[in-house]
Image (tube, rainbow, N blue to C red; front, side, top):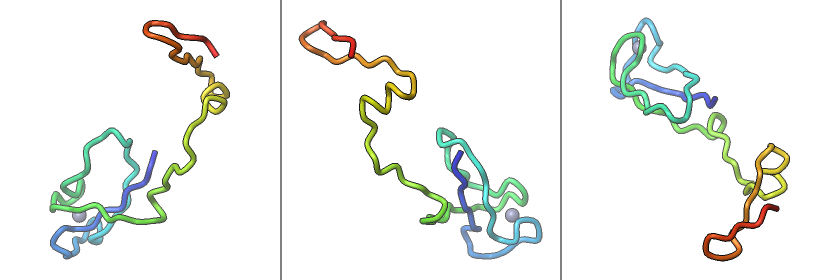
Length: 82
Ligand SMILES: [Zn+2]
């Protein structure tokens, strides 16, 4: 689960979150718009450290190692199990 860094949109600070905080959130959740503590509007801080990028494309062997069964399309409606 990635860690997102948020700061108050108006650049201010609050006694609860100090104007900046980090939050662990599932990637499929929508971006946070308000501080869960003080309810002020927040924006996501784009940080190199906290946004690791997956640069290596997944290969068939990687998927197999992960337990996937790979099918390759040979023809219309014809799949070969690799
Ligand atoms: Zn706050």
